[in-house]
Length: 147
Length: 389
Image (cartoon, rainbow over all chains, first blue to last red; front, side, top):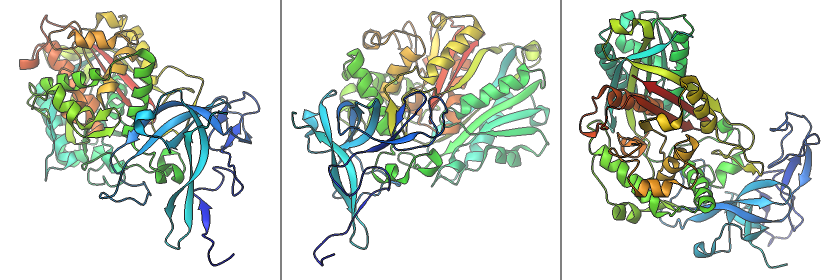
């Protein structure tokens, strides 16, 4: 590693593919009933089958619902903002073609432009910085560039 | 199953009570309920009590419900602590009703109290079964869930967001008629819409806040109710249901595209069947209004209207105290706040007053004889009751 390189880490192991981009979210698919969940888990919440298989979820989807977070959340929120510089953020559930709706932050979109049903795509974003300077990376969705 | 009656109710005012412990408020409400029924603490054979504060991070000051026996007397009765999220009090009443209904006991108590600090509830990812990342990223905020469920509902059923302020204004109007309410000052729709935006489209006065308070009810075998009161209220149906696969609940990193009706719908159907009545027979109802939109959605989930009819009903005043189906006549959670363990018991207390004709300035006209309550809580619990006189 060169002195200039910034160390980066995903906010959690196993949440999305790392470090090669474009990233994919990691979910689990039930071999018995086909249910897809996020993030990965072993037992199926629909039919109880054990041994769900890890699956890479689609990178594009549509916005199912959303809201804004206009006050600084209490713990366990771990973002870097303080009461004085908190600017709020947008959150939503994005419906992926795999048949699962995933909670996400919405980025690169003005509040007035958010519409249920809009096309979105996955992106990795810097979230905060560890005390040792390591950049913590999270996933988010942004308006999709028309295919 | 043995029929069950409510023969005494009590309440400690909701709000902020510095220096008064949760258990002291629970004891206050219990003593009032005992006096209302004309019985002694030592007459009770059992109690179910809910106090959630001791379970929440940062809320450790309240103590579990059975600590109130230290104030009321160590009689050795069966005391069971209940913890079931915002449905805690509904679950305590269900358990008390089942205890009498089974024939095991004749006379007992259901009580709830809580004492929460200011601000939205703290949450711990691990204890809610989600990863730390979910909390770190700022998703673990209950009001976000309320707003997202609501935004999809308004979108699907074409309900105007202005309906939200109408619901909140009604709550504060009713709260102004309730001497036990936390918020007793009416607010205009303009003041409500103009208050601080917290989670689009919900503003500060459209969301209830955690606070402090207690409520208690004395239950007995219906065939013994005349010993205690000339005006018993009967529990005709009580049910608690949990989420099935496909519901939309709080603290969910993902949702299924396969959608299922909520646990409130399941509990609601169960109590109508037990009572042998339908939603059209209900004359006064208390429903979970954690925020304005919850009251709108719960009107349909409890069968009082079809999805999308709420805007017209509310506009026409059908849910006002003088309307066709008065809802949240005591101001609901919006005007009373939410001491979690007590909140559902406050609903029961209000329905008992309404059915006795004792609700004072907020009394529903027309001598109502069928009442209904519903609480809903994390992680997906609905509890409903049908009460008659």
